[in-house]
Image 1 (cartoon, helix red, strand yellow):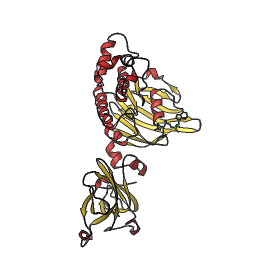
Image 2 (cartoon, rainbow, N blue to C red):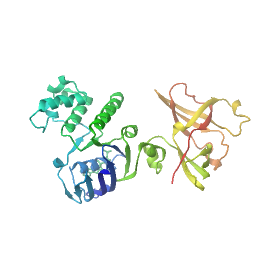
Image 3 (cartoon, protein in one colour):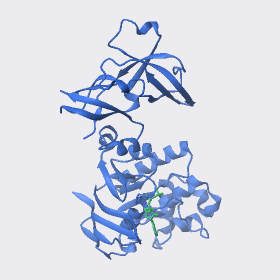
Length: 358
Ligand code: ATP
């Protein structure tokens, strides 16, 4: 059963439709990530759920309690919802202990503050400090401890990891996910980081122009996106023209298995770059192998662990559209070690099924 249910939620700011009919269902104890381009309405939605603002229209129900129905809303302090904002929003004049214990009842307060600090991985020694004496990562942990102190029914995280560097970000994300899971707290995370959304959440919701384009599991959204926008928002995508029939596509990359049994002449199919495998060869290696697919590396950009390379197709065994050969540069990300260099000839094979857009 749904723990949080949003139905047809709308919010305007003057002429701007920040939310234009949001529907979302969140199950108890789950983690949902909301992603979408800047200005699509993510923060507005969190603010409405938290009760900082009321919707113009629509219904929001949390654990059977109607939070808002049209603009009649339960006030924020009565919702039992914890919020961790991007900047942590700590009280600068209060100590860390006072920040965590803000609004806590006096009995067992000190004990509880120490316990929460321990849970979020903060050293007891910093409890006397002020927020400006902490690193960004430590401040985020304090904000999380403060939000957890009220034992929320629902936790809203608005890009809480964005100020952290890559390594700390990944470890914080994992720690927070485990923490919330153990506490059984239903969580909604807003993030700009696609990989973060896919790894943190059990449900991902992609927002565009004030409503959700697609909501599903990370696997569904990554491998079976509804359209090109969702596909490209969640990672690199190779999108090709194709004809499909009997579970296979005829495409510039040859005959590829697809996730549809339909027969259609003009479709777009999608592969994730990691599905295209490369093997070094030479121009001589191309002769006498008409069924194989070859390409030449035209660009190569080293970025540490990964390398981005562009491959121009040299032949295509079964093209639906001859013009597509040679004009279809494939941009692939490969491990940075021993990557083919510009001018090298590679043999391409496709692993797994391509996704057919509806
Ligand atoms: P970002 O990823 O950049 O944080 P977002 O998806 O969170 O963006 P929102 O902050 O929800 O987007 O804003 C949605 C739209 O509503 C934007 O066009 C924004 O300019 C507008 N908006 C948000 N808050 C207000 C406000 N208080 N007054 C007027 N317009 C607003």
